[in-house]
Image (cartoon, rainbow, N blue to C red; front, side, top):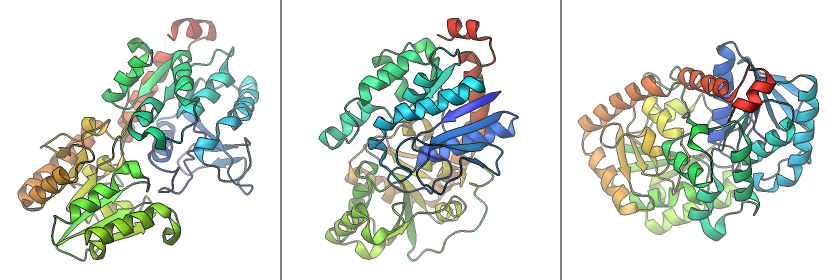
Length: 403
């Protein structure tokens, strides 16, 4: 199958941990690699954000990355990319009119818009993964939401136009239904983890105190790092390691805000911000932890808890979005209410005081990842979604039957 991935702002080649580089980058890169390993031909289309990038990069994992000239060849915040989606779509359409893929898979709402515009009238089925929905973001962030005002209406348009929507969790299905997407056109395909990289065996970073908590993610308020720091003041003899942020942590405004909060809480000496961590270094960091904490206000899926579980580390997570699918409460970790540092501190203290329970959670987490969340399994499930969308079916049949 010839597969075109469209990921307008999240390049699979990008360094993780920046404001606009996170789980979607990992998802696109890992899914593309797994599909390529299963014999599919995969090209990822992402926006050129540097004049030094070649048009096409052939990766060591068997897929290629095409840098699309849309907007200035420089870093642009993703919330400012909408005006450039017309040029993005024109580039895609010019390519696909000459050499059409069997299926297009859009990642994020603007990629979905570009995919729908580029394929109109060409008979190419489009599958859409939103990764995050504007309705959910608006609900939780309110006036702090920096998304373009057109986002929610555009997501509804994309949901109606595409052949199928691949939701990442059960919670997202209900949001899609409220948007008017028929249940018959929604499949649930989770994110995945590489069990060869993320595994219990291997080196562990050196810790400084008897206990260690690790939390990972982009340094943005919705990730809940303030709540973790607040909870730490009730958890003695424990260090907190925060991974993520810009390459220059000394000038990262969110890092500076969080450090000031740590000082106010009296735990500054027990909090370390280590900035961006490479994929190859992440397992040793996770394995060094007694607990991995992931307590965002909302989360469409969340790859970090899966990676921790694959490493045999129990997880404390907020009971939101996709985290309620992946983390089984009192089996692979603990679920706590979002934005509740008191409940978080209680759960952390309870687990740190019970090594046997932590070990049982760690074993159960590893088993769960191997049973459901490997990228090989996710890729196979995704390929079946492509087939249900009409990939490989003659255009006149696919267009009529994809709904």
